[in-house]
Amino acid sequence: MKNFKFLKVLTALFLIAVTISPLFANGQKETENKESLRTIKIFAYQFRNDDNRTQHMADAYMKSHPDVKIEIEEYPWDSYFQNLEVRFNAENPDFDVVIMDIPMIANYAERGFLKDLSKYIPQDTFEDKIAQKSLADVIYKNQIVAAPMQNSDQYLFINTDMAKEAGVTLPSVVVDNNTNITSDFAKKWGDSAWTWEKTVAAAKKMTKDLDNDGITDVYGLHIEQAGRLYQLQPLGGSLGGSIVAPDGMTVKGYLDQEPWYKAIQFYSDLFNKDKVEVPGSFIPGYDAPKEFVNGSFAMMVGGGWNIKMIMENPNINVAIAAHPYFKDGISTTPTGSWVIGASASVPDEKMDLVSDFISWWTLTDEGSELWYDTNGELPASKYMLNKLSTNEKYSQFPRSAQRLGVYQVMNTAQGRPVTPFYPFINEGFDKAFTNAAQGVDPTKALNDAINEIEKNIQRVK
Image 1 (spheres, rainbow, N blue to C red):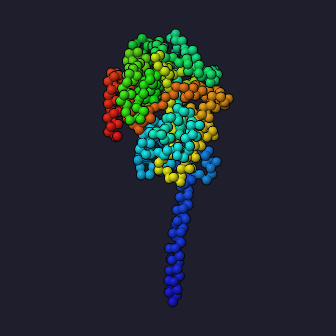
Image 2 (spheres, one colour):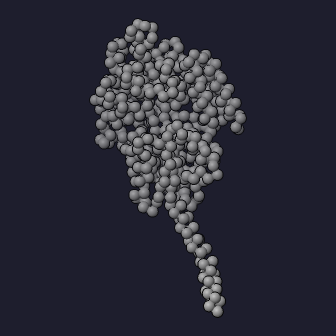
Image 3 (cartoon, one colour):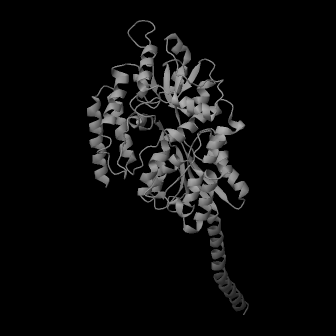
């Protein structure tokens, strides 16, 4: 009898457990879903290996949104692109927000990996908040597929001691550690840029064989990113050249035109005819800014990211001049940098949060200023470009030198091609200019690259 009563109790408990446990499970699942919808996962580029700069932004956002949790995966340059490609191609990328290099976004958008942000943030807001040329670079097929985080700028750095020794007169307006840079000054500075022809003439004078052994000890000029599209696009751009068709589908009729044959011949001549460029600069790991500071070459066309390191070095006296242009052309400068977007896998019910975070970072005064103060690169937001130009906080050198970058963004900036085939174009362009620098006939090098690019485009169309 006792056993019978015990079995009845046990059965009752079992039935209660069977009834209640799904309720607990459902409750737990509902809690997890709510937490997931308030958690932002970021796939990030590692801007500095000793400082998680994305974390600075996440912490600030979470401080004002205590119910939000942000998780970050960070990857350095040498593994970032491979890891991002693997994750994008996975059934579930497992991130909501992605930080991307700007020339790749058309490729990602074409393959359906990115949300159209203009569905969640009005396009008018982007137009009000972001510099026009920066915004144009993130529009693909009439969709805003990312928000610009920052921009980039380029300068001609001149070793003034080497220039003086060689009898080279500097451009009429340059910047040194004592220059008071205003917006009016920046325009005069931009207007005083040397032509490429004058730059090469100066480079020849500053190229030296110090011990007369037939081997060059000091080269006259180096373009920082040897053979790279980002840095060399202004050569053809100055002559009116475009790299791809407006729809991004072909380089035929664009990269095979006279401006680019002149550009690649000019680049080849720097190494092979004029012999003012550094042949060893194509070696992996070549540290151009360090070599410039050490006196390996007299002038460097390089990025604004070098200004602080170069100008604060006590062992070298440097003037910063505007980026060169061809005498029969116009002044164009590289631009574009890192952008932030939303993964296409983000559920609709989560996009309000994700778009708010992206908007806060890139479009609000608070977010864009915090990012500039954190990372220090040239801004893309109108608010920060204006503040950088006018506010006393940014009037001290070397940060004040970026007022020159503001001038570039507003007047000379030319973005890289917006095309889903950018990886093919970038690889072909780099190969052509590198081969030309290393002695291959420039016309052949460019034609071979164009054929290879077109073959790759047709293969995946």
